[in-house]
Length: 145
Image (cartoon, rainbow, N blue to C red; front, top):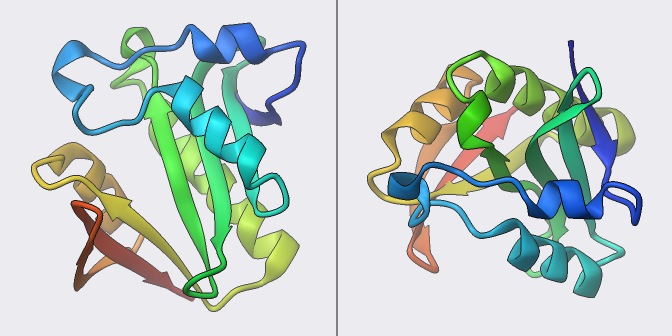
């Protein structure tokens, strides 16, 4: 059973300890960097630990991008020890549901690093489509409801 839980002082160290495979490091920000951004953007960033029962297995952060006035899947990773078990798919579903239920947007955006075919395929399987826009070295994708 996969769940998402807000990152708090009680689970912070567990979330900071999560790592992707070495060959994926260029695609994903370290969780410490993501949590620093969540702190600075505390009104518009919602960081969650991804849990399999009581074991932390990943991190997902949803946000509101004020510059463009849209909601976003901002950060997402599953620890290397727990990949290829369907956890990412379940966590993504929960993260998107959080934004949809809380704010009700017509679309949600995300960015994917060029060459990250696994993430892009996962996002496409949820209905995200490439917008053709590139920013900060990322390919923008949009999910329309």
